[in-house]
Length: 321
Length: 171
Image (cartoon, rainbow over all chains, first blue to last red; front, top):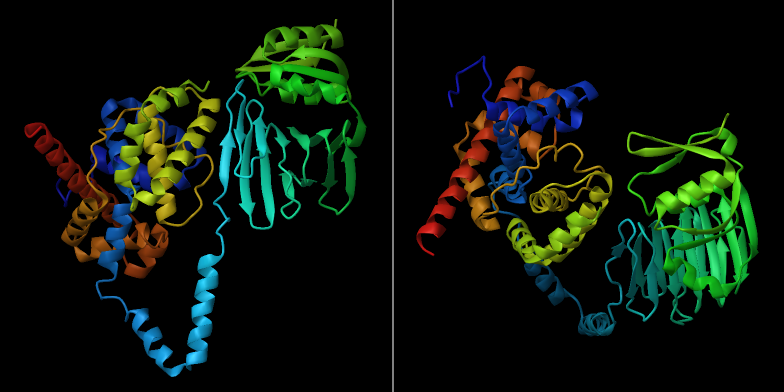
């Protein structure tokens, strides 16, 4: 490469410039970048190679090494050894006991573990404490076990927990701003857009909102906390527990938006309620989630809706004749 | 939708070998692997992934780099950088070897160019700030940056291509 060339950038230099400015590109510049990338295989190859190089942690290490050519400060071990000489024997023994305590204490603090399922997939796992975690379609949860608590955080979708009893370590499930706590029980937490649903199949759980308000739910109770629609509670038949494992949704005056949220865990073509007049619509019935098209036709027929497909989405509006 | 992930399952050992070589230490590998699969899963919900293995290498690169820098990975990774689905060669030298090559290449840059590059890449300064600190024009800073990047990519490219040829000669 000619270093003195002031005018024309080579393909490699252009690629480097795009890569270098990647985080700062405006929308128009990004479109130009995509066009440039697609313009030739050579562009794509050169760009990919540069990206691989610049994302190499070995390059970071090399930069650090070159940046600080001086050998690093005195080893800390020496200092502490010298200090130990100053400290009395009693302290040394205390230190030894502390070390022993530290070594003997169990290390139950595991790094958080994430579990996820894809569209139309379901899975279940046995956790470290013998609790069972069932994840419904298109869901994601992170699990963190601490010495005094079992903390789970549902980021997406729906999960059911069969909790192994351990009074010293309460089982908390965080969903949006809601915390559901159980000691030993079988319950489900469900994210439907902004709403959080809780169902108790067995035992007792407490549900705490961010403002401190708590409620206790027992077997057969369901509770939905919706930032817009408020709190709704009711009873269900715990025997329907198996339903969600069979792709069937049992809706009893369920808001249409929740049904749509559930269906969207099963389809690659998201369904959107685009008609504000449908905000309060509710629906009852038994729907097969895995057969999205048929369910959508059924719902459309019941509520007199008009599904329109556009840009890989299905828009629902009230039928107007 | 999750086909890309099931394809990856078949190549799990290949992906893990790649991650092992790209990571600073192998104890990170399992974490990176897990995170890579999760991000693949998320991305496969949004778009079809034509070259799952090549794509996974790139995702893994981003994750390893972010960990090395101890910054959180920006969400939305993959939307811009993965426009090209071109498979890259998966021959990778060991981390230590790569570090040595980069070091040599950095030392081969002119001192000014090396300073500009390190201010940008390591210290994450803006081009404007670098121009002010060095007294260079913005245009000159850009030239130094892109040329440093090209020189570094060429150095590692040549080394890895050489390594590949050696492997082919002695099976």
